[in-house]
Image (cartoon, rainbow, N blue to C red):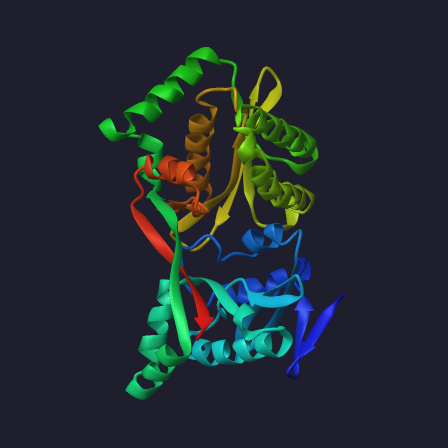
Length: 326
């Protein structure tokens, strides 16, 4: 197991052995952002090296990319421990990095920022924090009432209902199954490969290269998700048409009130399939976790993805911030 030793802190390799420890600290907070889970970070770190350590009784997750160290999340733990942990984590990153400008903490939930203010009642300390750090709003997570996604009531959801009804009429033989690694793993990967091929076929040539750069990371994430599926506390759904997998989706529980959809892919040529599997999976998530909300993550800055996620009428948009040093 690879480790880093920086400023007397031992950073361990972030792998499946870190799950129990991370989950223990996640129980100390209550946020509804999709990034605050073990699985959500583990699968997307398949092409980079993650490290973790405990700083001031908080769980601290770092990523080493091109030799520079940043944080994927703020320190996770009781709020009275977080501010001091942040100071120490910047010291760790600064000690390792070639330039302190590379040091940053990403995906910071607004509740954690409010925690600074609650904890730092002394005005001087608040001023010192603002003097030394820049807090920048980045993306937002889209969060919906689970019953809205199931019922699809009202004119605002009319097009979604029509797409699902059309799908059911054209494909009456469609069926869904709870995802099983051994049964569905290879079929899921095959569908993903078809999805990539179809997208690049219909995509303007000037966009293909950028698209494939992003897909490179997503492909590894899906492979890791399938390989370690049974160890990640996730649940998935696949949809069959004529005994062939035409869609899949995977999600998990974030907190007591919120579940998330980690990933969803459907056959590009099967109209209505995405809307159908999304609603069916929402039913599964509600039934399994007894949640009130569904988080589908952020839009990664893509305008088309933003339009799709807004079309489902989110109940709330939860911002995520990045902390830099001035």
